[in-house]
Image (cartoon, rainbow, N blue to C red):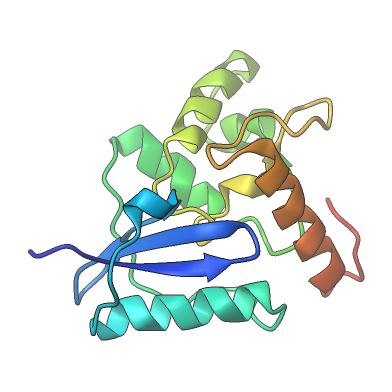
Length: 162
């Protein structure tokens, strides 16, 4: 299993896509020092195209094979994240409830959310605090705010979030 990488420019800065010919394993915001040369890996190039379409407002869902490294609990949370529709929001508490956990477990859900290695495609940015605050985001809260506003503008729900 040979992991390859490509880096793309986005409205939010550089994004590094990692994976094999069979799956995407990571999509993360990166610094210029982490830039990788272009790859001929067709799956990485397909991911680049789909992300470009997302940023252009013409794509709302992704069709890519994903394989993220994480614990069983993290995978349960990440599966729920993928069920949050484009342009809609959930809270950490709501996700905990969906996992049949008590309301105090929202912190554990938040920690799993923060470990998501496949940004945007596994939409951890669609999760907010119970009070509506844009709590942390690994890529920076300003990016989370941009992503939510982008989805609001391009939502089939006519810009209605939640």
